[in-house]
Structure formats: C-alpha cells, structure tokens
Image (cartoon, rainbow, N blue to C red; front, side, top):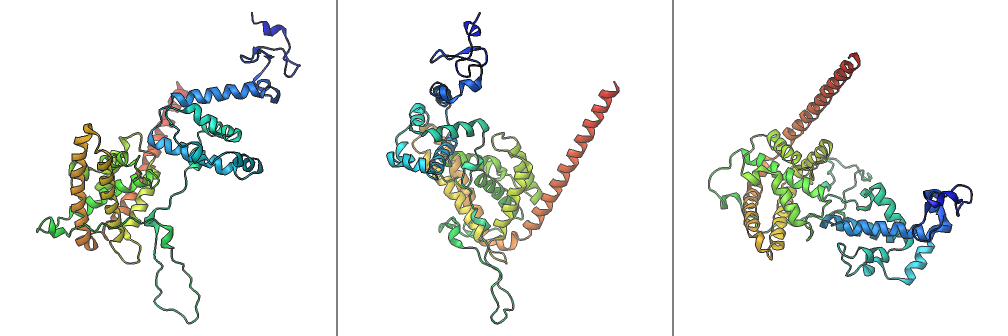
Length: 384
C-alpha cells in the first residue's frame, strides 16, 4: 500500500496525499498542487525533461526545421515586447547567435537551455495545441500583382480612383534570357494540346509554390519541391498529352489525392485554380505572357537548383538525369509560350473556370448522396 495515503498533502494541507514527488519526495494530492508555485522547481524540471526527451526522439525534416526556427524567432520577438524580456535581452545575444552552431536534430538539450522561461512555456503551449499556422509569415504571391487600368476618359482635375499595386512589394522571378522561340525546337506547327499541357504543368507548379509558402527555391527544400512538382504533372512525368482544360485539371487532382503528404482539400485546390487564372491572365488588362514566362523560368530555376543540390550525391545520378529531361521539356513549353501563348492561352481561362464550377457541383452532389445513404442506414438501424 502507498504510504502517502496516510499523510496529508504538504502543499495544500487539506487533502490526503496520494502521490510523491520523484524529485523532492514531498507528498501531494493532485496535479494542481504539483504545479503550485511553491513546488515550481520540481514541476518545471519535470516538464523540461519531457519536452527535451520528445525533441531528442524527433528527427526533424528540413521543412520542420524551418518551422521550428521561425517559431523560436517569433518567441524572441514576442519577448522583446515587454520590459522583462528587454532586460533579459540585454544579458544575452539574439536568438540567431544563441542557436548558432546548434544541431536541431542532436542538440535538443542545448536548444532548450538557450530559451528563456517565457519562451519555454510558450513553446510547450504551442506544441500541445499544434497551432503552427501563425508562426509562418504570410507570403504574397507575385502573380497577384495587377497594373491599374487606364481610364478611357479622364476628367480635368479628377482624383485617381484606382491605385496601382507597388511592384516593390512583390518578388518577381526573372524571365530566363535563354528561352528559345518554338521554331528552335521544331519547324512544324504546334498541336492544340500544347495549351492544355501548359495548363497541367502550371497547375502543378502553382500548387507546389503555394504549398511551400513561396520558399520552393530554398536550398533545403528545392529537391523535395522539384520531386513534388514532377509527380503532380503527367505531362512532365509521362509525356501525356491533355486535350481539354478539364482533363489537365482532373489529372493533377487525381495525382494529388494519391499523395497523402500533399493533399489538403478540394477547397484548397480550387484556390490554386484561382491563382493559376491570375498567372494565365497576366498583370495587365489585356493578355500578355509575362507571368507565364516568369512561372516557367521559375520552374527551370527550381530544376537547376535541385540538380545542383544532388551533384555531390553519387546515388542520385539517375535523379539528376531525370531532372535534365524535365528541364528540356520545360525549355520546349517555354518556347511555345514565347511564340504562341497569345493565341492559345486566352481561351483556356474560361474553360478552366467552367471546369472548376463543374467540380464544385459534383462535390456537392457526392456529399448529398453520402448524407442520404448515411440517413438511410441510420433509419434501418433504428427500425431493426
């Protein structure tokens, strides 16, 4: 029988003790008493040990490392907002200096020791709630930039109604100077399927770019991003031709649903479609291919960065060869965009928006059927 049951709690002095602190051996009655201020040294050490143990068992991916680093940086910023933290910051270097040289995979104890008391408590709270969304800075997609429309008639002394987006707020990809016209690849006329193939590739690119919050070119992420991009487009992966905007969209959707780590929801994918439309339309009122050329130049840069990252890996020789083939395909489609997009792309936008509406209606119908079937089964169960 536990001897603590014959003693009263040494913290509240009201209830019978049913536990014993493994650190100081004091009898206590509940978690509330264990966490009491008078017992803070033992309880804080207990939670510290548990968090450190969890961190040591965790093998962080490159993406998770970035999230953790952003999380810790946000802690530092929040702490700087109050006087106590400011006094604390006078005694220690900033967070980047404190974590310099610390291995996020192996030095979990060191990371924990570098955090202030407030940072540790906030860290434990966020881990428990699994609320990481606010820790990632909001990214402004470059393709959302729009030039202001020029009015046909301007009144004298009229105030300007529509403000133009500030280009300095956007990080535009540089259009590659190595893009060759379509005639460089073939003397034949381009088949109609190329505009839909371009759409299929663009859907995959836009999804990956949004999925990684615009950090797809990051040295630690580019290889994974390139792999995801290739896996989502049958045009790139299998050289499959698309014959409609619906086929281009549904193929990418089908590939996405097969990859659990990437698929979020249909609503998220529909947001991707809206962003693809912005790229297809370009920044001006009338069609221009600037955004398309930027997007494909960014794809080419992603593939190039990925090949460079794999250069030192002997076992990745085959992957580098495959990425070289991907580059050649992107060169080909970039040439088509340069020469023929103006005549082929404008009709793709309304087709894509119609397909989006069809998908939404189909999803509503599927949910309605599923709800009806569920109600029938519940009714049958009650009758039985």
